[in-house]
Structure formats: structure tokens, C-alpha cells
Length: 279
Image 1 (tube, rainbow, N blue to C red):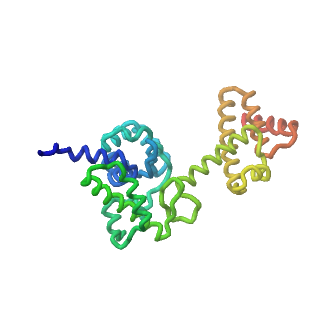
Image 2 (cartoon, rainbow, N blue to C red):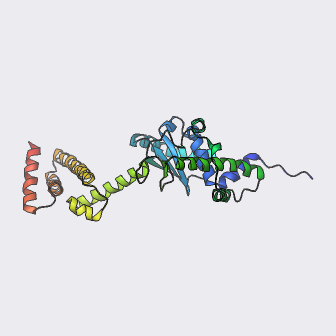
Image 3 (tube, rainbow, N blue to C red):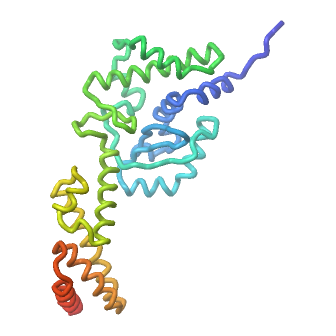
């Protein structure tokens, strides 16, 4: 009796469903086909629980890609043949020309995968990714893709690359990749900006007790950024004839700038500041 033939595309779809690494590998190698010219400014970092993390060169290109986010999600799912991506999270970061996010031809030229061997434990881990793929042919093809992925990661580790908590490999001596470093900087800025608004952490000695890793240079940079924002809002209020609001912001400006001091002195400086700006 002749067995029913199963469409190869259906079998590959099953393989993709079972393997997160396979989905990531496909998106990394075929990203240019999904986003076109935007692939020159972006790259796939990893896929986790329906969220696709994408590195983008700068905030300008993130804005451009945000405009097309829903379209990119749709194309990504169409490319994978299922609803695997429900959200895309863009992070600022530059594609390292030496890492494994390079195009296939460039990777194969620079990395001799045949010279690498995986340990028994690594093969066991790889086999766990293949659990549930019943068709022998598709399992074999998927195994080849996974083995290359495991060997590339091993190559990077052997050549001094480190794996960040987000999954990306990077070559610097920093405790995390540039994308996560930027995320930490933004988180730090948000914390200090909120503290300044509430008239807290007005001196570096106060802030460093709350944030042990904070440097004085970083503190002063964020403080200056906050003062600049307040000054812009003061100018807007004065332009619109809202002198009372401008005065209140001026008091906050000098409270932050001078690190506190008595209310009477702060108010006097704020009044002088407003009169100076109105001239």
C-alpha cells in the first residue's frame, strides 16, 4: 500500500514551529528579504515568546521602522508561515561586521565551521530542540541548521566574544552588549530625571548612595540634561505669558542646579532669572 505523501513545506512548517533557534536562524539570514533596504540599518537579535528583538543603528531609523512595524510583523509571519511574532522591540545598536549576524556568504568566508566539534552535552542540547519533529528528512535538515548555529556560537566564544544576557555575542570588555548598555543608560536617566523632578538626589553624594555604580561624570551629564529641558519649558511659558508657571519651574531649576539650599535664596535667584530672560 502506498503511503500518503506529505508536502515538504508542511513538514518544514512543523520544524519551524518546534524550534525557536531555527526561526531565529531563518530571520537572521533572510532579514534583507523581509525589510528590504532597512536591513542595512538593522539586524535580528533574538526571538522570545512572540517578541522579536531587533537592533537598529540609531533613533532616527527606529522611528522609521516603527512606522512600518505592523507591516514588518506581517511580513515576518508570512515568511515563517505562521503567527510566531506578535511584537517587535527595537533597540539601538550597530551590527558588528565580525559577528554572526553577517550575511551567509561573509560568515562562511570568515568562519571555518568544519574545524569545530561540538561536545556530547552540546549535541544533547541540540537534540532537545528537535523533539517533536517526526519526519526524518526534515529533522535531518533542521539538525544541519542547528549544528551550524551551535558551531558559530562556539567559534565566537573561542575567539573572545562574550554572550550578553540578551543572547547577542559581542567583542568589547563591557559587562554587556552595546544594546543592553544603552538600555541601562536610558533606565538610569529615567531614574535620575524622576528624582530631580521630586527634588531628590540633588547632589552626587546623595545619588551614589542609591545607585552605587553611578559615576560623577554620568550624574553631571544627566543633571545638565534635566536643567536644559527645564530651561526650554521656562522659555515656552514666558513666551506664552505664563509667568507664574515659569517662576515655579525656575525655582526647580535652581533647586537642582544648586543642590537644594534655603527656599528664600532659591526664590530670589528664580526671580532674578525670570527678569533676565524677559529682557
